[in-house]
Image (cartoon, rainbow, N blue to C red; front, side, top):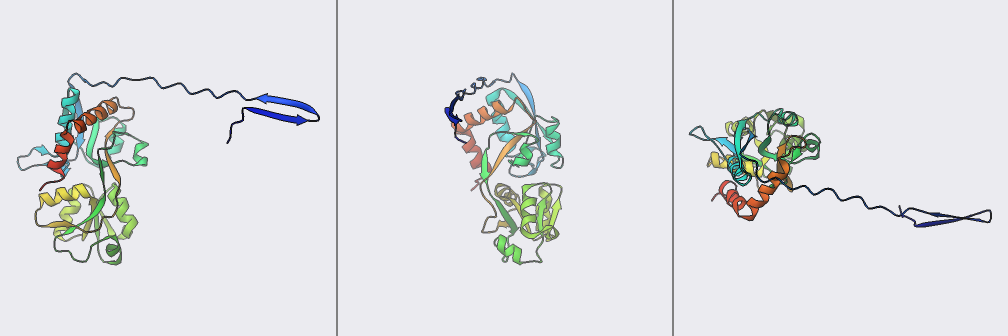
Length: 265
């Protein structure tokens, strides 16, 4: 709609003039200084410990992965202490909305529906979803071939964007959902499902965990999706964490961690 500074009407020979008030610019939001020293605060970080390369329990029984390394690096910048808490994926967003943990890692995709319940950090990765298959698979090479092979069963983790993608692709009857991220892959290697819809970075992680057993189908299913950390609504940690991640990009730490966990030789 166009704004008119002056409206002139002639009614019955009488000149009526109306001057619309000039638009008043909205006041600038107050500048809030980001807190960059949390004074040794303990920050509870929810991880599933079943989603390599983000988080997994190693042979020594220790939690390792990108989430562990990046949160230690973030807390070095912010003078805080990460306390990693093993948490189930099911009910994670409800728990975060209730403030049960300070932040959730776990390679979580940013979606509008989730953003209505919780807060996100700035994105830290762009990725696509792929089809993970057994190394001897020759028929499943793309989403189209999977659709055509009507006897093939797809494994996914329940309540994820992977599950949404799989159902939209082949229908609910051909999708088998599991409670944790690792179970679809275990089922794939056992021959109980024929492929797994999964984020590309996680597919690489499971391939590293099971050398010579798995591969990624040549054609990706999606692209341009973003990952971020999850916080309770209006969490005061969002701005400091975003600041810390900017520092980690600037000093090269993020690149080093990407090379370590997502681009292994």
